[in-house]
Length: 392
Image (cartoon, one colour):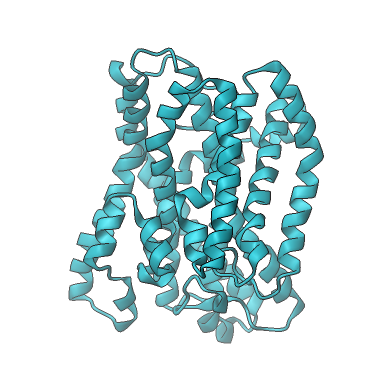
């Protein structure tokens, strides 16, 4: 989310997810902000690793349930579908109707064609964007590619978890990591960087390494070995990710928009390994540990609670604000400070996103989640580890 605040707040109303959107100034703070905020793309890899970890854990613990598929898909449906399809209804039906009466030229690129709508309604938007690039989809919808990857993962993974033994499933995960990395390299060689970044099979390594953490945690011997490697690999993987960014100055946005081979291939695998190591160390930490207390803090729990709506609404909000003039290009003349201009854009957009997410949770999402208490959707087992469980 911080990454999107940066890309739109810096670039202004004409921003799109391209490398040309980075700051062009020479001030020191701009270069620092460029590097730090420009690394925000890595958040989606944390999202995938966490998903692989949590979903695999939930599925493993419910393998013996007589209603394994019904409970999993039912709970996923009431959590994901209502808000997503409400958002699409606003973007595709209500939005165009309103814009038809208050049309402004600056809003023209927020319209979507029939093909985009079809891919969005069916959770296949990442495949379309992989073929056509970011600009083929209206800016407020571009980030839905990651949710499409998630939904496709949910569609396939429960069958593999149910049918394969734990050790064999770990082998499949290792194989998926290799396949994903190899396919990204092939797509890069074929000059399809968006496909390398957006297609589900090309991003399977982050999901798979998260699943490995969950599977290893369910065997004491495997867990000890995994923790040993997690301690060894966490800092080197992070260092390699940062070094890859520093040594590729042409990559001002992130994988998918970069002309460099390393950023399009190994950078994503290394990010996944780093986050998997962090999750494993967090699970193994004692309750008195500072890291454990931080992860269990009310601050992070607050954002975890409202994270889904924040994900859905933040990009449309900042795009609309940017088109309305709330961006660096328009504010710098009034505030006489580029740093202050960017901070104002980010603060306002973030505050509005939080307010919408808060209202959405209490007035809309929570009502749907009550369906999880129905007998047919009630989960029999608490996911492990309980302290890292999220709303599923």
